[in-house]
Amino acid sequence: MHRTLVLATLIVIFLFVVFLFLSYISPFSARSPFLDLSAPPGAKLYFEPDIIYSSCNNSSHNATLYLSSGFNTILSAQIELSFGPPVYEVMLSPAPDNFFGDNGDYLVKLQEVREQYGRASLALKINPNQIEKRGEKPVAKLSFKTFSAVSSGSAQITFLNKTAVYSSESEESLLKETLPLKIICTR
Image 1 (tube, rainbow, N blue to C red):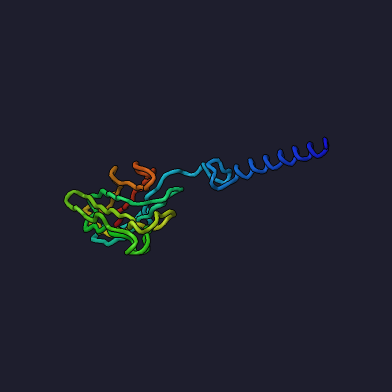
Image 2: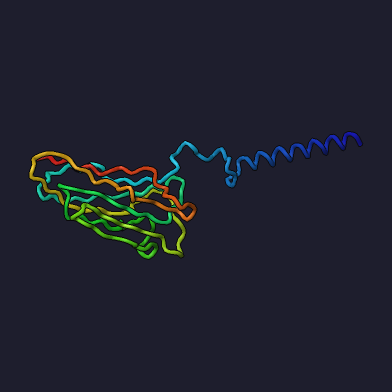
């Protein structure tokens, strides 16, 4: 009888330890050792290419704007760009192979360029019948021309502070990093 009680106690202790271990490594546990907490928690917007070398003599250029979600799921993105000479005839539009999916998967909430102020805006949002997206893909396409009276110099197309990336899980922007597009005029 005494042996049976000891054996039952050992089995209960063993099962309890197995339960704790499985709970610890579960993907539903916030303490999972497989979750890489060293990666940046926020989203990132950047251009590819990130540097354009141009004669700046009425040259046409294209750059793709990428969105990387990090560990987040993304519901919408508002892109606000600032530009100045030598950049003109700017066009900002959704990328064909878009982060948010095909044309019918998202709504274009805002698309406008105000050349006189050196501003371009694009806001995209997932359709209500779609799930939020995660990953790293193109979100917008930027096309523009450059012209400069000087033979050399540089300029940037930068993100304004109004640029934001949202999730349904947070009221604050998840955007943690933006990288500008550099334009170097060479003749």
